[in-house]
Amino acid sequence: MLSEDDIHKVAELARLNLSEQQISELRPQLSKLIDYVAVLEEVDTDEVEPMVHAIEQTNVFRDDIRSPPLPREGALANAPKTDGKYFLVPQIIEH
Amino acid sequence: MDYKIVIGLEVHVQLLTQTKLFTACTTEFNPDAPNTQTQPLCIALPGTLPVLNRHAYELAVKAALGLNCSIAKFTKWDRKQYFYPDLPKGYQISQYDMPMSFDGWLEVDDADGHKKKIRILRAHLEEDAGKNIHDESGRGEDSKVDLNRAGTPLLEIVSEPDLSSAAEARQYLDELRLIMQYLEVSDCNMQEGSLRCDANVNLHIVQEDGQIAPTPLVEVKNLNSFRNVEAAIDFEVERQLEEFQLTGRKWGDPGVMKETRGFDANRGTTFAQRGKEDAADYRYFPDPDLAPVTMTDEEIDAIRKTMCELPADRRERMRTVYELSDYDREVIMNHSPQLSDYFEETAKISGDGKQAANWVTQDVLRELNDRDLAIDEFPVRPVVLGAMVKKIVDGDLTVKSGREVFAALLETGLSGNSLSPATVDQIIEEKGLAVVKDTGAIEATIKEVLSRDQNAKSVEDLKGGKQQAAGPIIGQVMKEVKGADAKMVREMILKIVQDS
Image (cartoon, rainbow over all chains, first blue to last red; front, side, top):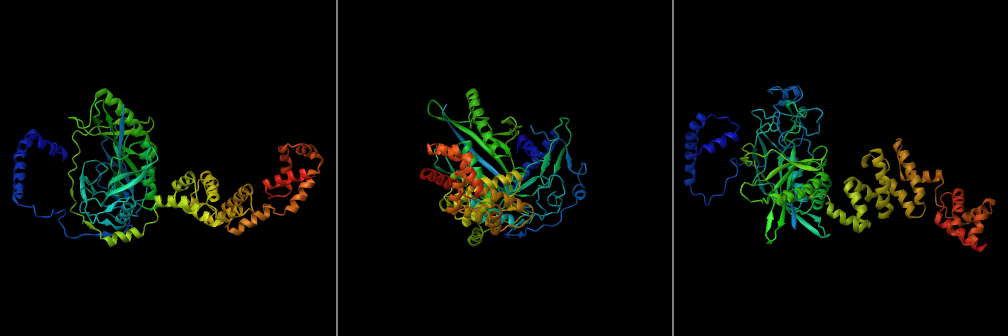
């Protein structure tokens, strides 16, 4: 079973603000998911080359040729907040 | 206290591509028009998919070969996940466990002047983030985000901690920059952020019992000039020494974590940045949207063939072929590959590397600085300067007259007239600057000048052995016969006076 700290950490990494009740609900659920996937550990993979990618294809390139950018109003169209030039976000505290 | 400084550098270099790493959006530097250089992928609109820029990959391979790295036959792309407003997708596409190149090295001179190899752990490709602009009024206003830069191709070059002083770090960076510039992989313009550096610094302190105590590791972030890299390292050495004496805290002690610090260029000090509560957990995993890249030996060789001579080889050639002093060579090579080309052409045409170097490092560089010109815009091209310098080398023009010819050439060129070697002859002719080799004519002039009443005293002095009395007479003779060689005139005067 995952610990409460594990759930806190995963929530923090995903920037999820969970209530204590949600944490106690999610803890067994997430543990169950992990147990489910853990079945894979039973397979003997000693002789198997690690798979680094799900697709067989390699070397998909495009040429270094420009196409027009979005107009600024298009780029900012879905911004929660903007001054017409920039995306605006709550102040980021640097130090 | 006896200690060793241990430094590793992480350098980000922006590659000279037309478009971003994974989309056809322009990469031009344009901070004055924020958010005008984005495409749906740059701002992470749903449904967009990345496609790799072939040229970016080739430039990265070229750069890696220049850094003596091995090129991976197989490489893949990974997502590095963190939340920050300049990273619209919530992850950066980078390379984690299979970088496109690894195991390289650069050479620096150590404190004793010996060559020292600095190992390069890896160089990998990744996309840049956007730029955050913070409100500095203290009123807590919103931060602004400009995504023009988001997705620009970067090569991250990670050294092993083999550097032992600020001076070595500086040399490493100088050499790295030269390689990138000579290979035309990056312009390394630090003002525009095309080269950025983070420095990992700590000390290995030798304790009384002979045991080595490493101080806690510090990463100084976002150093935007080579001078700042040196200053930050020097400051960290002092700070870490003091802190160790105070606390005795060592790297590896429980609770000691790597510290991230910023650099205050005005004060020359580093400052603690808010420590992350948890050690970074980027949860890298292979990007399912991008296909891996493979390279055959033939493909790597094909890229190798497009490489020009590396700075280290060119430096050696400059030394042996043109017999340049270390100083002249560094001035020319560190300025730019373009100036090196300019010098070499001038040297070839004039047939004298040392003379050509004098003109290039003194006169040409002075004019470039005074007039704020790039070498490619300089109107006196090597074919013309070389022709002029050749006249000096051949003894047909004095260095002093050469300065006059150079000034006239520059003026003519700057006013839009085309210049050729013939222009050099024309100017010499017009100004009467050709060295007069007709000793008969010079002798006649000297005799005439010596007979002038005003010079009677000087002639007396000369006869009495006061050689400095020749000065005013040389001046008068030179005025009459422009282009005479002052040294020769002096010798002739002394002889004539003696013989008389």
